[in-house]
Structures are given as C-alpha cells and as structure tokens.
Image (cartoon, rainbow, N blue to C red; front, side, top):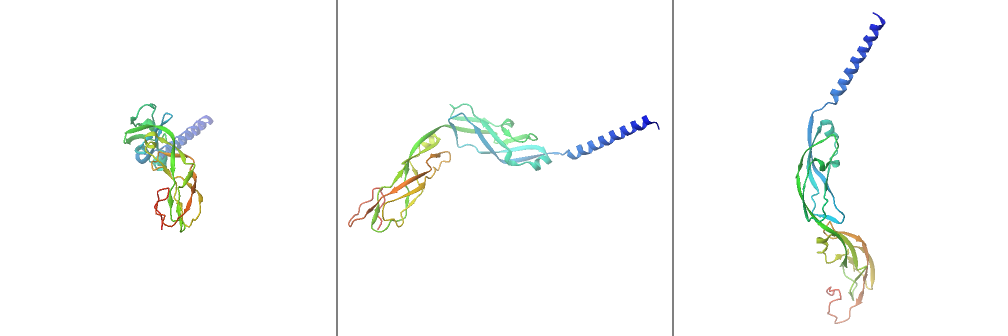
Amino acid sequence: MSESARTWGLRLLALAISVAVWYSVSLSDRESLSEITVDQAVVSYSLPRGVVVIEPVRNVRVRLRGTDKKIRQLDPSVVKLQVEIRDAAQKEVIANLGPDNVQAPSDFEVVAIDPNVIRVRLDREVTQRIPVKVGLTGEPAAGVRVGSPQALPNQVMVTGPESLISKIASISTEPVSLDGHAVDFEATVAVIPPSESLVQVVQPSRVLVQVPLEPQTAGDGGEPKDGRKERS
C-alpha cells in the first residue's frame, strides 16, 4: 500500500472515531422533555415612586418544561415573577401574567401560570407621626399608685399605605413591668409594630418610658391619672 493511501486511511479512521465519539456524547446528553410545577413562585412588583400594593398576591404556580436532567437540577426558589406597574394614578390594576413575567433559567419553557390574571390594589405611600401609648403590666409596691406614664418621644414615624395608616390611632409599647416599684422609674422598651404588615415603624423603634408612682393616701378611692383602677 502506498504512503498516500495509508495516510488517507488513517485520516478516514480518525474521522470515523471522531464521529462515533460525538454521536455517543450527543446521545448520552439527549433526554426526553418533562414538566415541573413550582407551587410557590414569588411575585414581586415594580412600582412608581410613592406607590404601594395593598394585599399583594405573593405567590403563584408556574409550570415549566425542560429536559429531565435540567429539571433534576432546578432550584425552585430561582423561579420568580416580576409585575411592572407604571401608572401611579390607578387605584386598581388587572395584570395579565405571561412568560415575559417569569424569571427562570433559559433552559426552560413556561407552560402555564396559575392564576394568570391577578388584581392589584394600589395606594399612596405616606409617612406620618403616630402617638405612642404606654403599655403597663404587673403591680407596684404596696401603698403607691400609678400616675400618668409618659413616652419620650411621644410619637413615632411610620410609613405605609395611606388607607391603613389613617386607621391607626396609636402605637403601643411593649408592657412595662410595675412589679415591686415604689418610686418613679424609667424603662427603655420597644415599640410594637402595627398589625398591618405593610405599615412599618421608621423611627424610633424604642422609646424611654417614665412612670410616676404616687403615695396612696387613706380614703383615696379615685382612679389614677392614666385611667387604671386602683390596686389594693
């Protein structure tokens, strides 16, 4: 066999081996497509400045399609939705959810979103001062009664939807214990955040409470200045 024929034979053999290796690797990577449902895909909102969502839809179900290998490797927490709202003047928006709203690895196809339409209520975000109401617990020493406790500062700054803040008359402190106290005393306590999760205490988160204790005289049957009933 001539040198030229031998060279061409080796070249063809190398090509055949390369094709066989490529086909083998390609075949091993080739998998059938399957679907996976992410039950708690987190929904976030892109909003105009000064606008907040009331009672937001926080999670939806998303069904994705991908290869078996990719589905096994998928971390469900990376599947999220982004809803963009541009009109600050609207009080309510109907948002249609589609594949463009879904943030997921590029290897996946969005098959379905449930629900695929959500109702979004909007409100103006405001910051306002709210009076602080001192909470008390326990009993002072015998022979004294509680005067009018004061919080310093006596107001805290909160922020949140205007419609919710307008319903808040005051914000309470954590209860200050009276147990065993016979003279005026002070305590630094935390402010209890409002029950509405969308309303946040900006500042301060703690206040100084001054509690006056007055001697209880014989025949004193009145009520203390803060409206608490006299303790025997």
